[in-house]
Image 1 (cartoon, rainbow, N blue to C red):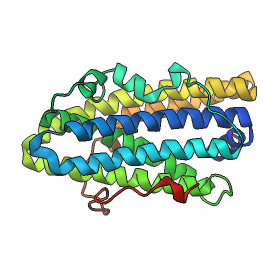
Image 2: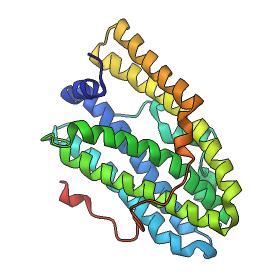
Image 3: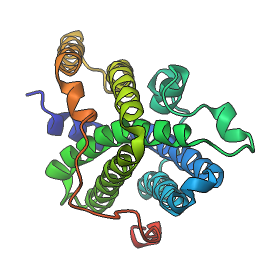
Length: 262
């Protein structure tokens, strides 16, 4: 039977597919850590109070990258190069979502509009990350090898999503509401398309490694396209709504160290 649990269990049980999965995940987290670190350093003076939270976000992402590398080491595996068509963060930037590398590598302070773009982009992508990790937590929270990592990362992603909601609402009350809604909608519609493309690419690579049949590949592709159709019609709206989270000031403290996982 094709289910999220059975598919991930198959990936987990095979060294080659697990190595590819952890390599893709670690690369994306490391990229997110770098981006947040640069944004924290370039926050405009009027938003300096936000800098420690952005830095905490980046530290969490770096920690997640180290966790995925630790999972590989526990299996005696080394990371592999990430196929370009599975590079979610790179493809988002290539399609104009979020802040560009050129802007982040310059030493000029960002603007408040840049911060709005950053937070709106993060709100959309953290929605995806939170949902994915909750799915893994539901099925693998007690797994002897990956359960602890899943619980830790899932909690962090929920914190990131809560922080984005709270800060975007603060900026909306400060008069940036229309800009926030415009950027959220643009990001959400682009993200669901890129997520579809990346999902198809990941399944193709996994299918080669695990030698899936043409029928299984076709069924998985059909499921990915069906999810995209739902998200394109109505599902994207969950990514653009804003509500005050139960977790307030979710990134207000220092980031926990990954050493407790290892």
